[in-house]
Amino acid sequence: MSAADIAPPLPKGRIRPGRILTWTLVFIGGVIMVTPILFMFSTSLKTSGQIYDLRLIPARPTLDNYIKVLADGRFLRWFVNSMIVAVAVTVSSVFFDSLVGYTLAKFRFRGRMFVFLAILSTLMIPTEMLVIPWYLMSANFGWLDSYWGIAFPGMMTAFGTFLMKQFFETVPDDFLEAARIDGLNEFTIWWKVAMPLVTPAISALAIFAFLGNWTAFFWPLIVTTSKELYTLPVGLTSFAVEQSIQWEMIMTGAALATIPTLVVFLALQKFIVRGVMLAGLKG
Amino acid sequence: MAQIELRKLVKSYGRNTVIHGIDLDIADGEFVVFVGPSGCGKSTTLRMLAGLDEVTSGEIRIGGRVVNELDPKARDIAMVFQNYAIYPHLTVRQNIAFGLYTARLSKAEKRKQVEDAAAILGLTPLLDRRPSALSGGQRQRVAIGRAMVRSPAAFLFDEPLSNLDAQLRAQMRIEIKALHARLGTTIAYVTHDQVEAMTMADRIVVMKDGRILQAATPMEIYDHPGDVFTARFIGTPSMNILAAQAEGGAYVPAQGAGRVLAGVRPHDLIVGGDGTGLRLEGQVTAMEPLGPETLVHFMAGPVPVTASAGAHDRFEAGQTVRAAAPVDKVHLFDPATELAIPRG
Ligand SMILES: Nc1ncnc2c1ncn2[C@@H]1O[C@H](COP(=O)(O)OP(=O)(O)OP(=O)(O)O)[C@@H](O)[C@H]1O
Ligand SMILES: [Mg+2]
Image (cartoon, rainbow over all chains, first blue to last red; front, side, top):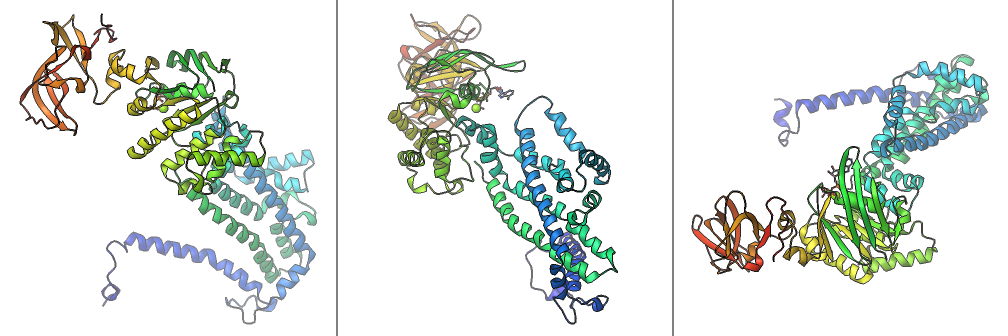
């Protein structure tokens, strides 16, 4: 007897081979993505003697590592550094990307297409290649080894500008013209009328920007030299190479580092959902 | 309050001229309705008035002041859009208050004005709702409220009712007219619905291809259309127009050159009537009993014609009917220019 014989009849078309394949792939993808995270948490709860015991549930879970990491001033410092940079970059890129995206979407001016294409074309250059001009620029302007040096490349992004432009194009001109007739200046129209109408895009952009900068490793590693200015990913790596590799400490630091990520995502996803509802409202 | 003057107004997009020199005076407090087919330039004219589109040449005056170069906000006008343009992220109260955004008033004064406008429009119980929880008619009232609180010199409406269903449209027509009576503010109103034009306007401006064909009171336009297009466009069902020639005092259908175009409204063309202005005969193609009267469609030679008959008269398809219209109901047009021929 096969499973199909016993199972209660399902509405026709509910289980199609395509669907089974999709679910299987999603499941495998999920497992691949979640397993390292589970091991990260698991290892952070183990003592250094236990870390090569690969059981997911530690035999004797302990919070000692967390106490040690939090008591170490360096970790806190790096955490704060990362926070400062990620928040500043997020706020700045949301602001400038929206402003430029709005201008490109809603104003007709000479050279508009050229500016747009110029911005888009930078999307095709990988970060690894941009790092050299960034570095030279920082060296010339004396930005090396400073917060500004870490932050400036992300303060305005081509991707964000593109994303916001696409969203602003969906905002009906009537909304803006009505405000123009009411006497609002162009900046206020953007801020008070256009921005609230694209909250889903802003939330998505903010999440991308925050996560991207929170986890950024390559550029902060290059631009910083003093340990006090390390961001968390750079600092955690230095944890590792400093003495013998203390995996349980690295994992504990990494586990703590996921907290802001979760907070940002949970805080903003509500706006994404609400924003989608607003955007779906006609008129 | 202000009169509006348009002088030789021209609008071109690149080489494409869409408004070909419009002249029009709108009196203070007048309710003027612009009608015309899609693409004739109604919205463009209104948007130039509002200052949303630049004028290519010509002059616009509001209250005696040339406003060509003024920003929309400096023109002292308010505009209501077809899609309402009320903001989904704000409540009704906040939306209406948007009209007072730049007004130098205290919070309390603004609040009072918003609430007064809401009361006039019957929006008081809805003040703290968001637009998503409003019906189409209520949304349009919010948009009107937002325009009203500014007490502008003139209101501009661009097809404000075209997103509403027929019943609501009829109701809003009356409300907007009542509002005009109450406020006495100059209104320029765009629609392609000739019923709206007939019922609301002090004066109708018929536009076609970027030109004004006729600007006159609804009854004047109905009784004395200035050209074939206006004659057909205003009034339902449309006026019958056919080539004709005089024969023994009355006009009868005729072919070939040297004729006039004779027009008669279906309501004036009576089946079995004894009018002596125009006489037609042909085979019935269809019949529409409307209640108060019956419309009879028949072929006057090659031309389909609509006439009216008594409420209870019935006709078979293929049956031959005669219809006639009195002299004073027959409109004559020059076949070359399609302009009305004045009756001597
Ligand atoms: N931005 C533009 N660029 C080029 N042509 C335009 C532009 N806006 C309008 N037009 C043209 O101007 C003409 C008049 O347009 P307008 O919107 O005023 O018509 P309308 O009478 O309001 O029609 P509708 O009843 O469909 O709203 C149209 O032929 C249109 O194609
Ligand atoms: Mg229009």
